[in-house]
Amino acid sequence: MPYRSYTADDSYWTVRKHGSTYWVVRIRKEKGIYRRLEWWGGYRQAGHAAGAAAQLAYRQAREDVVKELRGSLHDALERVGLGALPKPAPLRPDPSVLPPDEEPDDTEE
Image (tube, rainbow, N blue to C red; front, side):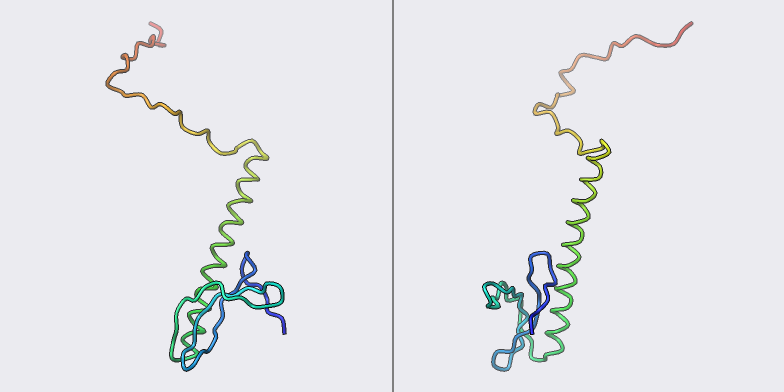
């Protein structure tokens, strides 16, 4: 039975038993083999490990969605001409050495 991908990078969190410990691991199928990408931690009870795997999967999925939405938002803003602000100037003025404001008063008498 093939596993579903739960994250943007085609990996997912699951539980693997080794000895008497239930390990929470992130795996991905590569060339027909499920490769462990990350060992998160181990539990003595399967239910506790499964709960941790579910929380990690939710957190990772949420981060993936936020990245996707952020990218979509930036693309949409670019399309309507409201793209990213310009980068700050490389030199920042020191207010103590700038001349005083001497703009004419716009009020009429």
